[in-house]
Length: 79
Image 1 (spheres, rainbow, N blue to C red):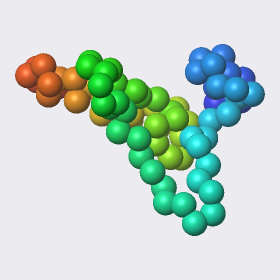
Image 2 (image 1 turned 90 degrees about the horizontal axis):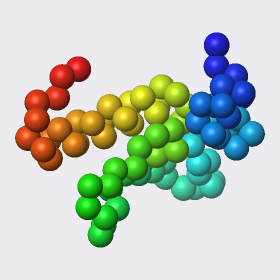
Image 3 (image 1 turned 90 degrees about the vertical axis):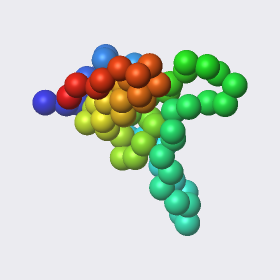
Image 4 (image 1 turned 180 degrees about the vertical axis):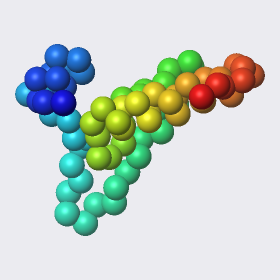
């Protein structure tokens, strides 16, 4: 079972926070691509990059990052 201590211990999340950034009223839900212009071979991934956050979101984000890296390196991605 996941608890706030789980997120603090394994993700170093402040006070066990598991949600991604909360949008303000009227704001659109936004997904972060994880690619920053000017930084080669840098991929940001994790629970904070897409709503709603949490460990399942972190796993999905990491999966997408691996698919991007495999595509860039012309390596077949195995699920």
